[in-house]
Image (cartoon, rainbow, N blue to C red; front, side):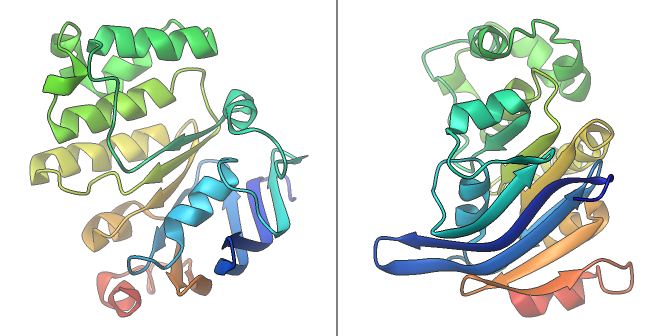
Length: 230
């Protein structure tokens, strides 16, 4: 890895039983970068994030985070190292309040400073006593991201964060992602192309389990270029 690189995926192959899902995937992320992955449903985007985060074991290839090989490590150990995965299901602990959800995140990370959470997501301040089951989709997404940034992670893997959300929430997340990238690299799976093109330093396009394009200049990071991969 070069001195600017924080995450490197090389030659990654992943299978579900006899079905191969990812083929020789390469992905490189520098510190502070916003990298997005685009592609149709079933292209392998979520599998890529889950494998990086340790929830799936690759059949071959390497995953290096901060000069440490992640292959074979448990997902919770990877999270403790500063690489967090935020799934697309927008599930929080529905019987617990927002405060209690954050307290669980603090217990796991030993980080009880919620200032950055409420700075990024002021809406959560007024929701501290509301149970997770009564939050809107956008509020749950804010809580999931807020909980994940406890412990000052260096990489956030965020899966389909704007799916099903109102435009006003998407606009807020756009600003939040830019602010979050000042302290952590972001790898985001997303299909909202205007958002993708607005926030991305680099885009990887996946098709049928293969990375078929890497877009890294402003001339190619445009919606009409990305559309061909959706």
